[in-house]
Image 1 (cartoon, rainbow, N blue to C red):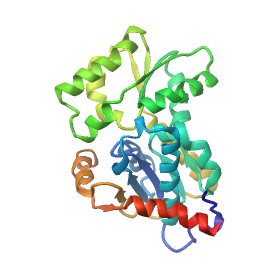
Image 2: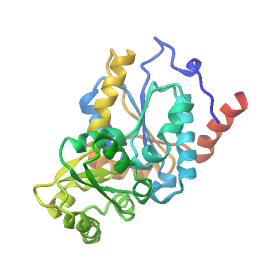
Image 3: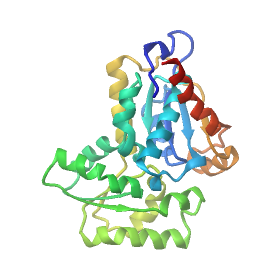
Length: 288
């Protein structure tokens, strides 16, 4: 198990330390977009674990191991903070990973839950099957407001269709209607996008939902939390941001092609092998 110390943190005056952001694929770009908006001076390292997506049907043990490898690799890149731009990782691995590494690590569940209870009391959550099975959102919401009612729906087909650039396809429309109907039947007043991929579907989802339903994107709220955390720890960057560094474990070309429609530019993307990721954990274990 990794055992990092403050010695692993970036040295002052060398270059601006980046904020690490990771997801299984392009979903985390919704968090990246919020970082650009709320923290424009911060430099970002974005990692998409595209070789192992979708995360939503993986076991909790697999998710924890994947996240441990990614965070250990990010520590080697000397990031100063990490945002889990993945609800499945946030639901299944956040507390364990926070205890293993010395940088601030933020997840999506609590910021999203807090935002939802400020909007309504009949709350629907659409998420990956793994997040739904964990009941992480239900637990977080009801700890904040025990009177809130929560219904969770696992949506296994959403992430693969988004990653295949099928957002506006008839198939996407059909599966979206099937996933949302039980929540519409429950007369929800609030819907949480419980996966960072899902804001990409906002036009489709909003065309199906009653207009009275408020949609919550936890991405905006986790970045608000990051702003507060960086301020509190004195980690805000005083200088201009460097270009975002994009890395993936799968095909750089495929990621660059699909991400360009949301980024507004075609990114330069590096390939990081699964062997390199797993070696980061192994190398640190040898040192500890």
